[in-house]
Length: 177
Image 1 (cartoon, rainbow, N blue to C red):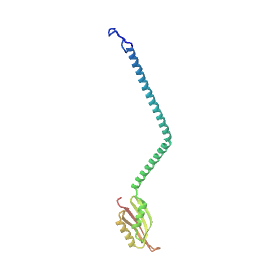
Image 2: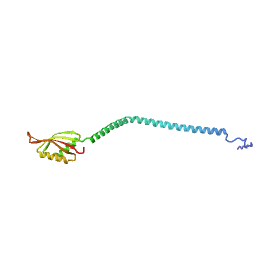
Image 3: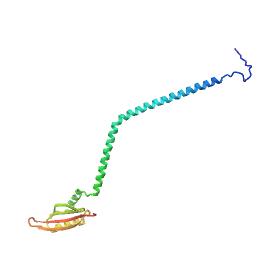
Image 4: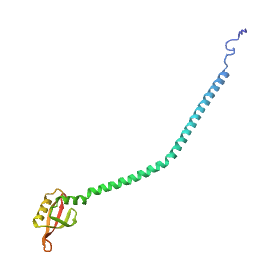
């Protein structure tokens, strides 16, 4: 066993750890920590680049589907615009099919229409035949009570000598116009 006795004053004594050694240890430790942080950031960067490459590949695989989706959206917008135009037009106009169907419910049995035309906005010219004058009167009376059509105006009514019928012509206006 070796015992060492240092009889030098405390200022002159050699320290157990020298300042150079402590600085060297701190420097080495700092380099190790910085190298670790650098390697960790390098790993994170590599991992993010790998994920970015995978996302780009996925995006490239989905590009045809995206283009089809954009084309479908464009077509859908065109259809919606056409439907809006159609809805606007149907609000402004009356359906002739509905008007003619309504005529079928109002017409008496002994009255026949030969011509139906639009005279002006909201007015129809009717030409036809009836078995007798009372049938024309019934026809006009039904239209005067009708909720869609009204204000019948008889222009002419004359007995046809060649046929056992009465020819008539009248103007009929839509109510509310």
